Image (cartoon, rainbow, N blue to C red; front, side, top):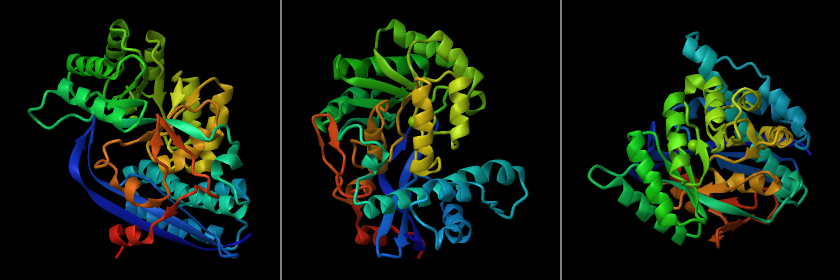
Length: 384
Ligand SMILES: [Mg+2]
C-alpha cells in the first residue's frame, strides 16, 4: 500500500493567559499537523508537538529530507521506514556547535514523529482498527490526570490558588493533578503540595513536576520533606537540571522512595535506556510527538516493561490515549483541565472523547479515531 504524498502544516494559537512552570512560561499553543496520502485514497493524519522556536526547521526537514524517503514506499513497513528516517543525514547549513551537535537532534526526531504518527493513523485506517488495538489493546479506557498548578499571578496566595485548582480539576472528572514546583522556595513549594493533598483528599492522585528546576541535593531535600510530611506523591517528575540527568537522578533514587519520572526532555530511546540503567528512574514520560513517534515510544515501552519501569506520556492526549491503553505498565493520560491552557485539544479534533468518572474512553474509530477539523487548521496555520 504505497504512500503517494505528504502534507505538513504548522499551527500556532495565542493563549489568553501566560502559564508559569518551574523553569519556563507558555504564551501560545503551537503544533504541527501531518497528513500522509495513500494510493487507495486513505489519508493518515495526526498532530502534536508543542514547540515554537524550531517549528519552521521541523517542517522543512519533513518537506525536504524525510518525505522523499517515503513517497512510493509501503506504509505497512513501519520498522524499515523508521530506520530510513532516523538515519538520514540532515545538513541544516550551520557549523556552529549549538546547531551541529544539539539542535538537529530535536528537530530530526520531531520531524520523524510527525510522519511516523501520521503513518500509524494511515495503518489503522488501512486495517480498519484503532491504533491501540494494533499495539496490543490492553484496555478500552484510561485514567486521566490534569497538568496544572502553575504559579499564580502576583498577589494571589499560592496555596489558596492550588486548592481552588484541585477543586476545579475534580469537577472536570480527572482523578488527579500534576502540579508545578521548582520556581518558588522549597518551603513554599512544600506548602503548596500540602495544600493540594488537603484539597484533594486521600484518594486524589498528586504528582509534582519541577521541569528540571533543581540541583540533585535540593531535589533530595524536597523529596525527603514530602515523604516526611506523608503527602503520598505518586511521582516526582524531572527533578534535576539538564546537566545531571544520570548520576544526579541515581543519587535521588537512592535517597527517596518516591518514584522518579523523567523522559519528556529526552529524545531518543537510547537515552531512555541510560536513564533506567544509570539514573535508576522508575517511570518514563517519553512523548511520542517528540521522540520519533509511536514506533519508538512502543520500543521504549517494551524495554521498560522488561526492566520493571512504568510508562507515562507527556501531554498530547490525542495520541497518548492509544499508547497508555495499549500497555499494561502505563499509568495516566494527561490533559489540561483548564481549557485555556490547550484550547486546540477542544477545537481541533472532531470526536475526541469526554472524560467521565476519572476515565477517558479510547476513540474506537480506525487509526487514532479522530478527524482533524479542516476549518480549525485553516484558521491557525502560520505558513501563509
Ligand atoms: Mg513535565
